[in-house]
Amino acid sequence: MAARIYIAGLDIGTTGVKAMIADADGQVLGIAYREYPCAYPSPGWVEQDVELMWGKICEVCREMLASTGVDPRALQSLGISSQRGTFIPVDKQLKPLMNSIVWADGRADREVRWIEKEIGAENYHRLSGVPISGMWSYPKMKWYIDQRKELFDKTYKILNGQEYFLYRLGAESLSTDPASLTLNGMMDVARLDWGAELCSKIGLPMELLPEVGTPARKVGVVSKRASEQTGLAAGMPIAIGAGDQQCAAIGAGIVREGMAEITIGTAMVMVAHIDSRKADPKRTVLIGGSGIPHKWDMEGLTFTAGAALRWWRDTFGGEEQKAAQSLGLDVYDLITLEASKSPAGSRGLMFYPCFQGQVTPTYHDFARGGSIGLSLIHDRKDVARSVLEGVAFETKMVISAMEQVLGKPFDVLRLSGGGSKSGLWNQIQADIYGRTVERLRVSECTTLGATILGAAGCGVFRSVEEGVSRMVFPLDKIQPDEGRRQLYGEQFELYQQAFLALKDNGVYERIAGFQKKHWG
Image (cartoon, one colour):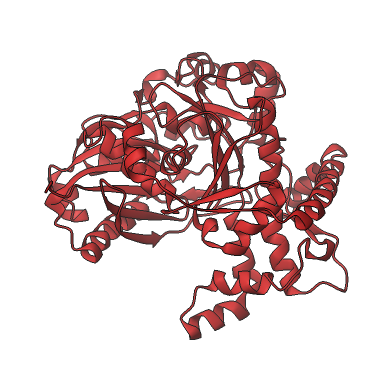
């Protein structure tokens, strides 16, 4: 009998880090998690302390090993998934010069206007594969160059999270991959490399950026110092995985055209595999590198998805939090149980989760969240359900935009992330999308994808596709209810009309300006 092969992955996300140990046949032995905070130094700004994050990475690795009982020396690979569009300027000693600027940060509205004027929306999309948005790294890097000159003059490299944490683990060089660069907004999407023309326009020397290689690539082994901090064995092979959502696509088995996965975590991100770059004349979706070397993917996103439910928990869910603590239950199970008592459509209440702007398909940075349709008939259960429905309505906007670019409907839609653990939320999605959705045996697709890519990079699998065939398995299918599908179809039209009315009449800009004037 062949010896069991153990592999591991890390998903270094926005609100926390997950670690996984699995075997090469897709059996997950254990998952550990540590949460860490973001900092909000000014309205719309989002930063993180990477030293604090590294401490949590070390903790989660030790817990993962302790909970599974796997000998660290038996692990044959470690793959990494990390945030995209988050960057860390470091000095020559590779020490951070400031907190990382997180993908959700919205400080660069003036720089966006500069991009619109000096580069132009059509030209920018042609070069980068993404529409203009203040959420990408590109305008925030211009902000850093212009507004933090004293730090920029000391900058040796500008790293994404993956390169920085791989360095802390023991990587032999600083390099990245196309599947980690989509939200940087400064990739030459045709070449799957940094966009030299875009970098030149903001005064960013190319030597400040890490080299671009392929995903699923070994970059070193765990160092002695990292071994002491994490509990991982010194000499354990480590590999670049990909950006978080590209890892999620791999962990969901999205390896051919016509397949797409929807991850509801802090954000909602939908990723579809494409074999070649697609034309997108309306500039509604993102085109970037795939976790499969030398391939592309198509992507759409909503920055506030699970974060909206978390906001509801923290702001209005005190009752559920107390009950969950006393009963030893998950607070989100109690919130969705309450929401299930409200009828489909939340009795006409519509919730907009645009806390950090609206992304796909309008890329409207000034959009703000809110509710429309409130009346005296509504109560807490209606509001809770409307949050779940609002995220699904936003996702349906993404699905519609991506299918227009693909030129046909998706034949497979798979759900992943923390949101896929909710039976109610899964059914709401099937009903709102009006089609069958699939769940997976392992719902933590991002961490699983990092694990697969790490194993492929370190030679456990001959290819990413082989890793997927060995480790990814559908669990079940959820069919839409015809009556609810029709009701939600009618409500979706209202949802879009109300959003566009506020957007097209400049209301969101005026609200954002008012907020900045008095509280910014």
